[in-house]
Image (tube, rainbow, N blue to C red):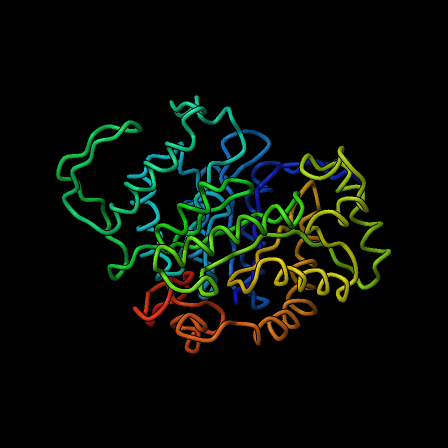
Length: 375
């Protein structure tokens, strides 16, 4: 089981002070969050990808390469890599290069994104989003596994005898998650290839996400990659914690109210009741997160959104400290006994590198998230 944090890199004003960080400050804050995550013993840092204001992470591989140079154990991932509008050749090359720079501590989450305007900006048609995701990933999958590729498709120029460089580290492609909010096509694609399935687990009811996970598990087994219990599921989520529940609610409320994701639609109390959002004391947050296993079954990765809607940098770093000190240790202990038996129970490399499972396949179980390779 891996625990970590992710950022969508939004630039937002602090509703209490009215101050808006510069893009420079926001980018530096994201890297500080990643470094702190490693310092306190978390396993993963992931960044989103956005090409529109008010967001800054337009080039996740660049940001993650910077973080790789400042960390040693942390798994570097993406909350979304836009499979519909990025050239699969560039994804293949950039993440393989990042693999080498980070000694294998790399995986990525592919998704379609949630900004319709990005499609024409990159010469694509929003109406073809599902077909683009299917075709682009089919090519990306081949680029990491084959050389001298001949390829014809609709989304990019033809390839004749093409080999992407560098090749994946040690011949092992980066582990891929397919991220979804509501798309059964994405769950099917993850299952077909035997990849991981990541649900954002943020703003919709748990039941919506649970139906997608059930579909993915069923199809994963039907495609012959292992049992449904061995399917590789990851979850997002958002928490805000203080020692006393009332303090957490009072402090988080103005940020919630100003959030384009959460506020402006329903109250904080309504949202925490209806969705996976957890705001409260450590015990309350733990209790809510433990209910995820009841809805989704055993899963391999839990990431938390902690820097959103103008929360100050120091507050975010405090939240990471509280996660690592008071919440994650309990979750590791409580979630560990429910892992299914069999070859998929413990990812290869977990014993040697307890903070991050390895990216290679053992050949005896399903694929597992990225981790570390011996030096």
